[in-house]
Amino acid sequence: MPELPEVEALAGFLTEHLLGRTVERVLPAAVSVLKTYDPPLSLLEGRTVTAVRRHGKFLDLATDDGPHLVFHLARAGWLRWRESLPETPPAPGKGPLALRVRLAGGEGFDLTEAGTRKRLAVYCVREPSEVPGIARLGPDPLAPGFTLEAFTGLLRGERRQIKGVLRDQSVIAGIGNAYSDEILHAARMSPFKLAATLTDAEAAGLHEALETTLREAVERSRGHAAAELKGEKKTGLRVHGRTGEPCPVCGDTIREVSFSDSSLQYCPTCQTGGKPLADRRLSRLLK
Image 1 (tube, one colour):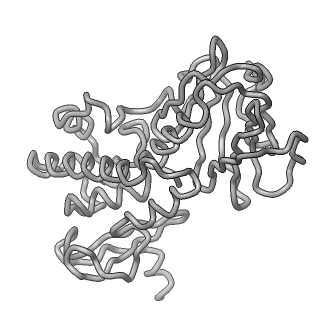
Image 2 (tube, one colour):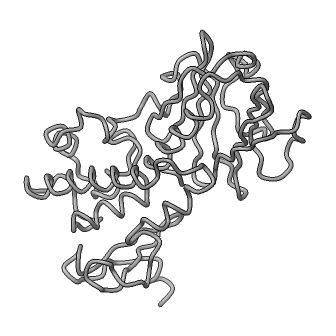
Image 3 (cartoon, rainbow, N blue to C red):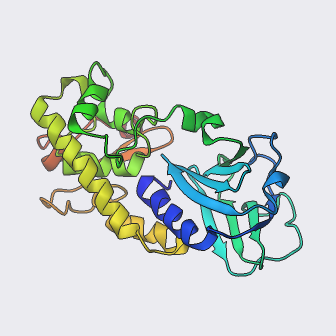
């Protein structure tokens, strides 16, 4: 799933390629992708793109005196820039194509989604705040106001595990499964630690790890074409998706905890005092 650093890089890429350009056609190719009907997508056509913004993991294309095209790529979605798009509308329900945006001049992009679980979401709205997922977003961790004091305030009274708190978009916007693993590894903290039990020193260390990890990832991603961002993300991850590999810090074997639809990775030596965390799925398989 694209997370804050990749979506930030996509926003930069689209700013470079879309700003000042005229939208010629907006063509949905999957019935499930469009989550709004008023205003209609056709209202975007003939308008100029005036800004591209990121809200958490959402991308927002603003047009002159017109609606916003907002989309969330979900787990398996992606944006594919094309130098030349066909003038004929795409056949609905064929392949991974979900939505096509064609600019005057023939350039544009496709939103695609792999797999059968279709979660990619597109909204045409008058204001981004009309999108429920944006309306409920917590503070952005790259914003100037995301201070240590603000961060500790978010954790106060949280009885959930810190991994879940970091991933909760209503608490902090933009962090998903991969970067929460990376942040906790950098902070040398167990993903199962209860957020409310963090000491002042632990909270400060986590805040620093969060900002450093995200800012470094943004810098690595900046300037890359959309097609390169997935590969760039994978090469920059130290623990997430690297089960069985040596930890780049201490050399211990990176372990995994599996859930019904996701998994987390961590280093026992760096994060849990050398003790492996319980993996209920693995335990069931061994019975």
